[in-house]
Length: 79
Length: 297
Image (cartoon, rainbow over all chains, first blue to last red; front, side, top):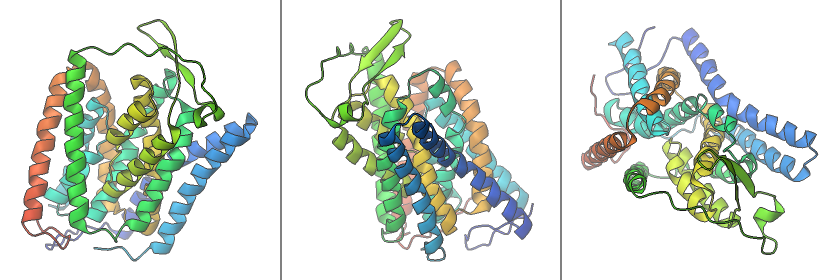
């Protein structure tokens, strides 16, 4: 794995193929907690607990909204 | 130096997470200052990386807590609405807040953690206070409406202990702040969640730490997903750090049983003081434009 670490202290970057693999690996880390919330929604719906299925769905909605906002804000990252 | 660099990040994360895991916390609080101070990574990338390491630390440690029945899942999901909203707010705020402000806040959180560790050290010497007796319900409040009161199995007493929750709105507000700070600094902020659960909601201490751990990764996933989508997570840094964190936190949890807690806590306080001094030095060096040029390779 080759590193290209410039002398000015810019973040290092990986070769394109490797970067895609590592990127999807990191996505695999972020997904499970979100999936757990999805599971909680399912469990509360099965238990016919309306109040808590709404609350769990709200948490899931916030996570999804964060990702959607992130996509919109892509590229405007401050240094 | 190329191949060395990711091995270096990997080993550093194992060390940080093992230390964190032994103390029962995530490694973000060590990883973020390390990346900014010694690797010259900008604070925004370091924070995003810290969030990944927090999730990585907790994916290996939440399951045992669930199994022993200490986690109050209903309380966790109610409070998660507040923590994830806090994390979302931070996504808006990122870029608005100046870097020195973030650094000062980080130092402040470090101080609070050190102080809390010392407190716990003293508490361990005194003795745990007797649990408050269960009281009858007085009118309708949020906790009663949502049926949040519960019991937990106490091994020492050999029976289930009933506890009641109080002041849900105050707890929600504190959780919102904890979620905000977690996303802003790239830490788990269990250091803020546990006292909030203890003092505002009056959860028994075992329940509050298990419940807090259960919430941390969902909160981190909310900000992590946003940072990931925005492209703030640099694979070249976050990859080795995430792998190191998983291995380190597993090692740390094993270590937890072998080493005396008091010595570990003292070591933690020493490490925190060193990090605070380093942060202060970096700020004084005039790194006010946000990209510190410190390099140690």
